Image (tube, rainbow, N blue to C red; front, side):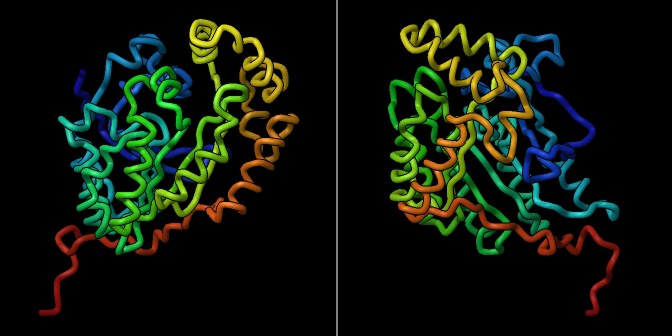
Length: 311
């Protein structure tokens, strides 16, 4: 573990493919070790590998909460929904020790700042005491990513992430605490876990999830080779067929952003996957749309403003 001290903590995102314009990443690298993780190539910035280095050479930002407090207090800051968990998991196991995410949530709560949290970890339930009041203030929504209900497949694909049953239990805990919670069935991998989509949605709905989403697998840069090597080792009998489906969804390549991130699915399989998701969500009674968060709820604490009180 390496501690780093960045000068800013809010990342501003200019991408047409995501539904937010800013995010926070408390950690770089992720010990969950999900073989399909699209964030793996970010370790190349440090001259490290997208493989084992990404899982074992981690970077933490212990000054994240202090930086966030300073940035939100600035007069020039204009609030918008902040997304957390869109790159590496904020609740990966080292969060138990560092509690960086907990500090970030405390600051966001102090400013009444809207935030969404996506994780594969049941550790999120540790922070229910912070999330519940934020939910009452309508400034937070959470999502658990559930890739499969098969513990053996989960252990192979996501070796150090929470077991599927624990993720569903976390959904139930958040729901019972009044925290808005959804499920992300992601990534869907054709020929490997896509057949579970409907079953995952049903299990999540039973656990209390109010909305759902899905994504298809993305294999940018080094991730493609890592995934293919893993697939040929773990599922040699299915590897060729799975990769054929993935290339079909990417215009003949392992990855093509214009295909895999397109608003309208282009391949037959991608279209079928969307149709299945839409029909299953309607049948199960789970919304395909997450609730919106209102940035107008943002308020700077009195001690952060120059305003004097009347009395």
